[in-house]
Length: 413
Length: 95
Image (cartoon, rainbow over all chains, first blue to last red; front, side, top):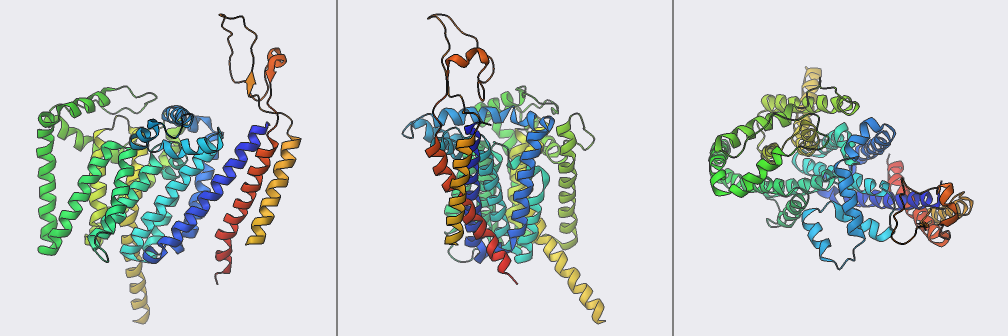
């Protein structure tokens, strides 16, 4: 042991305590609208699971090494380089706009010096649990206290989310952006109180998504526009008819956009093709080659890669220890998707859930377009799972209530 | 609450001071390698926590940062105690 070990432990304790206090304040602040005071237990369990995942990743290099040795090494090197620069340097603004995820880490290194990776991982865990609190507040607004609680349990305990929360990557901050955007869209959809209140929240969310994954911000903005159009349509025509019109228009826009994009934005399409051709270091579950330089190819890539994103990696792909560990995440993902579909068919489409469903659909297309590796898709699914927890929590709450009523009725008769 | 935070801060200070003084090794922060100007010296791996024996004569270990470690220990102890009391106490009070 050296004195540096003591220094790292002290900084980790300080950052961990601050994360705990901020999460607590966030839960209390959102309690009025989203019943978040009842989610202390899932948040606590999620925190323990995420800390355990850090320990497992460090103790079993076969699981932890593959992920931490690729992108994370680049992020960490950038963080150290940025922290060495004065705060007046224009690089801080530039990185804040395009690599927003490194800003909290660089500020930590700036404040404390080189204090290892554990404090940064604790910040990531705090951000991911903050996203869980925000998403639970949104579910609470839609379906009440029990819906918030179910959503929190799903989002906090899902194993792949727990694992990636401790990784120094884009996921945690992007999830905060998504949670803020969805909260704003639900507010705009329900339009209670001040109609402009959701705007700053939505813009901050969109900004965080842009800062972490710029391409995804385009699809998130499209989702926002669709929700706003849908909210106007729902007030002027029959909601079901409005939904059918909107879905048909969105589908037509996807097809027309796919065929127009190679002619309208050829540079962006060439960049996308370059990214899809690029050999991804460490990729061992590559997807079949995709061509996006033609309209038909782009449309085909959207459809096939969306299916790949949802279904791959398959549970029987067990090439390494990391893939074996990922099977649990894949099976739980299948279960959650099937449960959502089953409940939607059983209960019918709930109009309150449209903002979440539209955002999930748009982000699926966004992630699918840039997908080159099934392992990367597995990581991207964490973002979709956070959003999926909202409709699932609300529908499970309805199912639970209906079941309770049935039991009561049966007992009376 | 105030009493717990004070106790936590004092405990953090004591533990930090005890560990700072009892720590068997200091991190190597600077190594001066004897090389003639214009010649490169190959160095493999990290020097910390212990410098290779061949380099020990020219390895400089900075003086222990006891004051920094003690202050951080005070802060870490106080904050941790405050956070735990804030989060745990209301749960216990619930019926």
